[in-house]
Structures are given as structure tokens and as C-alpha cells.
Image 1 (cartoon, rainbow, N blue to C red):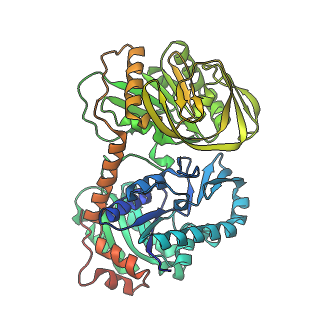
Image 2 (image 1 turned 90 degrees about the vertical axis):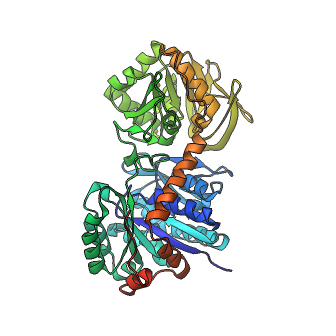
Image 3 (image 1 turned 30 degrees about the vertical axis):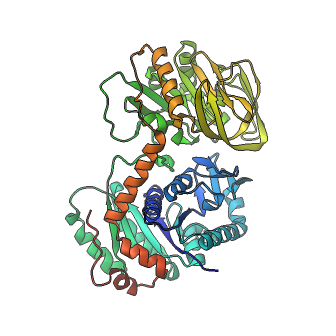
Length: 516
């Protein structure tokens, strides 16, 4: 059986740009007719998506699948960790719940998970021409090296060449690159084939002396310097990409008409932060992550997003005065939208003996709904409607509606009523519903009327799907323009080299052109 080429995009840290570079490489190769697939052995993220067969993978791998022109597949992310606290995570293996574990328990299970990872990667390499793998966090977490299945442990097991990415916008990137390689043992070092600088601003000639020194001291070239692009923003994987106070979205050409403000509450265990990105696609809608009551009260729309720890995050909201601000909005007839965990928070009561083990707790009481957490997680694609507007999305939740006295908000084509609505307060378990363009425009018009802005008109031609496709093409263009794709193709064809010969092998008769 033939085996497709593969390489690993590793990082000096979390949020270095690994996910987007993998997506860009996948899109660039797919545009050239290469049969390519993404792979992330182990992901830690509360942003997830549902595959066609009802499995669960990281949201970034779902985006990378779109970049490849593929449907999401559980093989693309065989192990997913969803943190519910600082010490315990919910583990998904091959798309299915594997249980809640602490760090020590998880490390004890790594041998079995390593075999799962190896089998899934081998399956993809047998099916596709190329597999672009993504590491997790930093490849130099040497305290975890003995049980590593996502970074150098994977690279060693599958003989993958590694491109090491750093975010220069944070500062200290040359030291990060040098130090990361220096911390690795010699056998791991031998697989690091080159460096990629991400988010560079300014005159590239100022960086040249540093890159020359880095190459002299490590025996590895910098294969690309990707410029900072402030219009790259959609489908962020890491919580670091959605901090409090950050406006969601790229530069927007406002139409000059009335604008709507959206306060998205940044919960400690927020999940599927990508839900609000469809709102940010609208040119006259400003979406900001917030954690203070004043911002919640002032906005035209308050969004309670999903949560990996609904009851605990609800207690956090009460402690910060956010719960009172949301209740005040609802009782004043000002729009509130709850999605998944946020919907559960809006209920009358929550019986949670599964996620938090707290039993029965009071919800915010804005919807006359009772929620009970079931042992079995609901994982499914959603296709239905809201009045005459088609709605698609996906569901990932333990909480289910036990009783409701509210009118139904959505109707699922297979299961019937979904969600609830009371006045300007609405909630649903359906993630991604705001990407349904007709529904989103209708909902925003309702919000505008509720807050006294009836003249607000959503842009008629905005497509959330097209925005995502343009984002993928943008990162692919950055990669093909500023990364030495010839070296990438040689790595895919030849595999890992051994320094110091790797520098001359990759460069050929010339040094790689790293100038933006």
C-alpha cells in the first residue's frame, strides 16, 4: 500500500498560527489538484464541530477540511480534549465521548491513544496524496515528552519533517525558535527542517541579520516570513484569540446606516466562540467579547455563548453581576440570545448531575424551561427552519429540555421543536444557526426593531460561507506568496532530513526567499 507524503506544522507556543498555516497549506495544495487532508492528533479546545457521521472534532480541523474541499471526518482529529476546569477535561476519541479525566489519568492512557493516533494517520496517508499535520501548543514541552502523541512523539513515530512556527507579533521569536530547538533531544532536533515566522510587520530587511544568525546557529533555514494580516480572523481555535475587549471580525466597510452592537459574554469555559463570527460578517454589526455588566446592559444584543461548564460559568456570571445584567435586559424587553450552554442558563432550573454534579440549581429564569443533563451526549447535525427561513447547524450538548412552557423558536426537520422564545429572549441548542444567511438577517431586523432602530437594514448580499471561503483563499495566498513552497514539496516528497545537511538540501542553489 502506498503512503502519502506528510509533514508536521509545530509551534513555539499556543496560538502561534499553526491552525491557519495548516488551513492555508491545505487550500493551496487543493487548488493545485493535490488530494490533501488535515490531521491534528490531539487537540485541546472547546470549539468543536460535528462530523457527518455524528462524531465530534476540533473546529479548526473542520475548517481545514473545508480548505481541502472535504467533509469533516473524525480521523482528522482523533483525540479532542475539552477542558471543563483547570484540572479535568472531557475526552473525545474518534469522535465519541471517552470520559472525563485529570492530567495524571490522561497520561496513563496515552499508550492506547498513541495507537489510535497512529492508526488514523496511517489511514489518511493511505487515502490521500498529502496529509498536513498540526502540532499542539509548543513542541518543546519536554516535561510531557515521554507521553507526547501530538508533537515530536508523533513526528518520531511517523518520521515527519517539522516546520516550526512562531508568532513574531508577541516578541522574542528568534529566541523562541532557537530555544525550542535547543530543548529537544538530538533525535527530535533532526526532524526540525526549518522555521516559519508568522505575523511580521514592517521592513523585512530589518529581520535578515537575525535570520542569518539563526541559520548559522541552528543549521536550519527560515522558509517563510508571513506578513501580519488583520483581515484574517474567522474560525479561531484558541481561547487566546477571543480575549475580553476584542472586537470580533476584520476591517469592515460600514454602509453609513444605523449600526447594531453585540456584547458576547466571555465565559471562563466558553465553547464554540465561532458562533458569533457570523454576526461579525455583517458590515453594520459590531461584536465584542465582554465580561462586565455595563457592556451587557449597553449593547443592542447580548449573546450567552456555549459553555463546557454551564453551571460553573453561571455561578461565575452571578459573582460578577453579569447574571443580573442579563436578567435586567430580558425583563426590559431588550434582546438576549442564548446558544447551547447559554440557552440552558436562561432556563428556570438546571438539573446537572453529569457535568458539574451540582444537582438542581436555579437558572436565570428568563425562559420557562427546565433543563436536565443526560449521561449520553447529543451529537448531531441540525437542518430545519425558523418560520420560512431555512436553518442549518449542529448540536453538541448533555443538557436536554425536560419541560417547556415557551413557544418553539426553531423546528428541526427530523426531531421537531427546538429551542424556546419569550419576547426578545431566545435560546437554542443549535450551534452555527447564525451562518444561515436569511435567518440571520431576519433575526437582526427583529433585534433592531426591539431596540428602536427600525431603519437598520442588514446587508442583503453577505454570505457567511463565502466569507469563510475568502478567508481560506487569503491565507492560502499568503502561504504561497511568502513560504518557500518548493521546499515544502521537497519535504513532502523526501521526508525528514538530518542537520546540518538539511540547510543545503532545502535551499538548493539559493537561500529561501523569506521576504514578505
